[in-house]
Image (cartoon, rainbow, N blue to C red; front, side):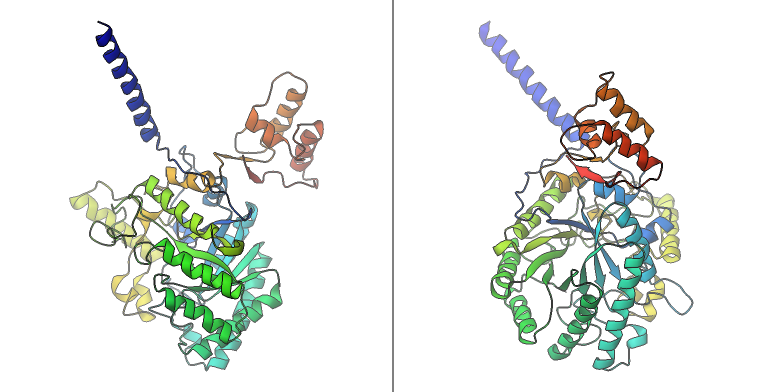
Length: 502
């Protein structure tokens, strides 16, 4: 009898465990071990360059609770502290049609910069010095610079960099770093000779220094699996006395080897040349399914196998990859690892094709194609063929990374987005001044503080943290007064409404 009762008890316990596990899975929770960051300002960044074009195509974003919100606010509340924004010179044809890829001209960058400032997000400005995508396979000069000599390109880079940065700053952007070229492993702006590349790097750096000496200058390369070659690039920069602060690399585990390769390169740069390092681009798939009708770079037949793919294709695997890359950069010698940027973590489908088939699928795909063409929100439009006929001109279409975003195909935040917070040891964030925790600062918050101090009602732990505007570790009547003055548009010495972590 006793044995039977024990078996029943064990079965009940196992049932509870499995129920809790199922509940956690249903809620979509992820588990991430925090990192003890050597640098308290470690960059937990994201490239969101396609955002404006997606919004023009009526794409919307929602937090984990399904509440629609500004993407930048959602990112900030989930621990993202830095944004990367690419800039192309003239990504349009002669009739004003967008080449696609987010049509990231300087005007688009300014729009993103102004919004970033609203949420206290710093910016890395990524100049491609091209009219469209620049990477190791293509480093084409802008149309207007096509016939320029190297010296003329130097002058053009100085002028374009200077005027662009002034516009971004005027729009409110808080620029912390500037990239002189994008994945310039084999060249920049149509130039491939090392001595000439050095001239262009120097021209860009010179322009940044004249704007603001506090802005970090980054040079961006890729293929860290080729460790000797990457170390040779650092040697080349030193040999030609190129002025820069940050040695940046892309790291995609599908193509770029192990994190040991990456760390080997970064440690060499830090120890030998005392430069900072960042991962300027990384990403990982949360699913192998396509959601928008355009083939993805990672799918059931491509880039899904390999010794360096150490994580499952799920939100948990996505969070694990992000943590692993951040941990590797955090461990660089002499605290020279500045941070990590996740590439285009919100480049989702313009409309979801999941589960559709036959005529319904075809009709929705045709609507998607029309949106990609009209708003330039796919990776390339057909109009790009005039500038890049061999690549974009043949394979134009939608997002190739929608299955690597931190949002599902309908714009709702995935559990993996919380990884940015959890990696830092936080579980959630709050708005400074939002004492009633309703995601806005209103007169009700001032009243809630007054009631708390009068012992009528009491603030919970999050409310008390949000109400402590003076950061004195206690709530006072001055905190309520600051909120009232803020709402009345009087100047107050605190950034009420700013997002903090708890």
